[in-house]
Length: 338
Ligand code: SF4
Ligand code: SF4
Image 1: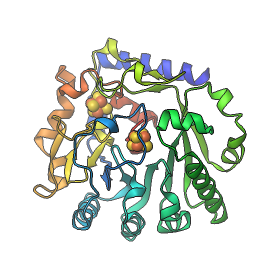
Image 2: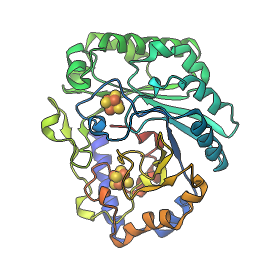
Image 3: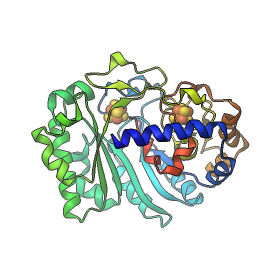
Image 4: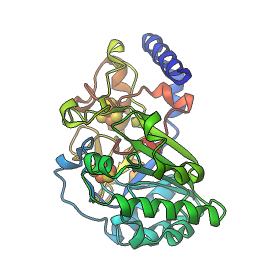
């Protein structure tokens, strides 16, 4: 209830701010970038709520040479937390994932590594190796702890494997003194109060740092509809319809993603095929620092104030105004399928 009230207050405040955009805040934000690296765009699940099923990009892993280039350019920008994941896909399928985490953490400028995963493949990678390589933030995307629900929502028959892998990850993390913060993100089609009481869930709740759950799911620019969802799952309503989106989207500050082929998109959250106006170039041809300081990118951010939005943004339900950044409601880790 309190969370709903807070959310409603934020939305009202954003509507008010849309009338008087804070240009000083825009300039301050201009100084900070967050960048993610997509190491794989291949998945081993096929969730009903995810646009992975509509991805048209060739499925591949990032080459070693390109990954090295990403690290160099990220460090050149000042480094910070590196998000090593996928726009859609599971990073653990990357056969070099652990080595890539080690390579990132070997750079003094990279202060941590975050990832989102369904954990199905963890037994092939090794929980201990993954944690000791230096991953610091893991979000596990899964369902309620019920095999039938898993089959329904993830359309995967790997429930038992995922559950064993999650318990192993949580136990090893505890044994190592909790080097990583682990959040379990539930995508469920039954009431959360019911799901939390499933017997399989007890140890997970005790060992996880945080358990969250989604009530609403994105429509991925019309690709996912209510009919695709199951049970209590709902398509996210457009909470910002009234403000006509005069405030630029927060993703344009925290969502930059280098896709698996080197293409850079300003929205690593919803630019599924890397083919929208949000594409800034390819790091093989133009350094990231040049793209992020380009006139084109600044115009993408500031055009919103005069009501000019990239077409992919016009009806996007993942939109959240840049003002949410100052409330700590938005992080680069939000650049996940759902
Ligand atoms: S939500 Fe994640 S696990 Fe599910 S299909 Fe999409 S990328 Fe794969
Ligand atoms: S409105 Fe949607 S597509 Fe546009 S930048 Fe924001 S999250 Fe990405």
